Image (cartoon, rainbow, N blue to C red; front, top):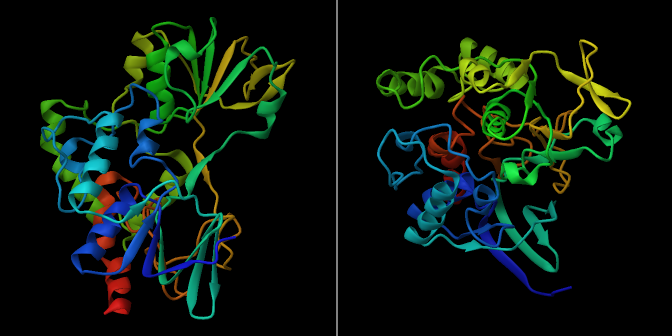
Length: 360
């Protein structure tokens, strides 16, 4: 165990878009801080996603504070372009990112927070948790009962169609990830897409109409659908249960590609094969779980969580633990809070103002 303790005013845990934009604001104030990131390279969380992934928001709404995304306003950036942008962003503002440091514990000793990562120890008066929380794949327990001849993948493991075996594919979860992966796989495999339809955005992505209404939609999502408005609180509850509307793929696209759209959920396994809630059994050779991610804050040794594992906070500020903040959470303050173009707005408001007030 190292005897060296590194001390800062503020420690940011997580070097993705939420952590980097937080660092930008602290850098502008000349504050003493460090960003700890588990990846070996900035942007790796994006690089590891499936090959054809593009952002669900155009470049105009995909930039961080102080540096617009370097692409035409209504182009949808590829995932590697976003990864490279984050790396360039950190370099442009000389943000103090320490890479390859996976935090394994956050606790408090007296009036200071203690962060440990292996044999390294860090202390600070303030900690910003910018990991997003939702990085542990959510896979139903019955998945372990699938026939061992069936190839299972979570969406976080899927990269390209060549990974899969020949034969049919069941994609479980009909949100944006599920719909896009199903459409891609339909070119080489028979595909079934199972799950509740989350709705679709009203326009075709990239169309002239889409470009005209995009500013209005972004305004509504960022300024109207907030935790401060009745419509925002209602939307938050609905989106947590159903997911965001499909951004690019329409039901007509799936139908034209030959994807069999099953609105019944996948609820279990029978004779080693996936079982639908309507009683049907699908004889497939691959299953892709597009069932999202769950929070995993087991490394935070502080009494700040709801029974479901979500942190108790007010727009990112943990009132019961002065100096502790979260950024990049789903619907932290608005529907755009967890989107690339929305994290900066959150930090520009209450959480970072509160943090800066403590540092001044």
